[in-house]
Image (cartoon, rainbow, N blue to C red; front, top):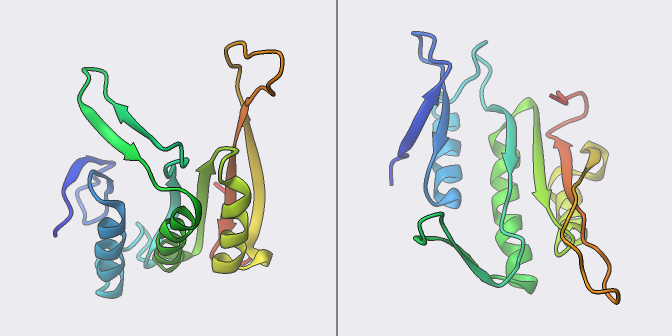
Length: 166
């Protein structure tokens, strides 16, 4: 299936542009990787691959989400080992899609961040872990017997040491 660009950014008149792509992310990653292999996916300076990838995968909430006008947005039904394998398949493609100096940020919450860190170390290599960024936010009150869940984690990995941090 060809990519369906929703919007382009920073079109400079040349071949290079940023794209927002709507659709199945696994299929999009595979298509982008094929484009990289054919030399069709390059940075403004001509280097192959993508310098920055940010993903916000499902958090294994086992819920169905609806849009602002009550239309179906997405399902977050996968959990357990199925979620770990879902993430691993995408991370392998993301690593290959990165340029040699690229960096990937993976955004997760308390449900799966600790599982993802192990998979990220496996796919990218422990030495290519840059940092864990904690996004702290305020939440509504919770019952006295529960801990407040007030942060998400963003894991930053480079394809190889010396990559950009952005």
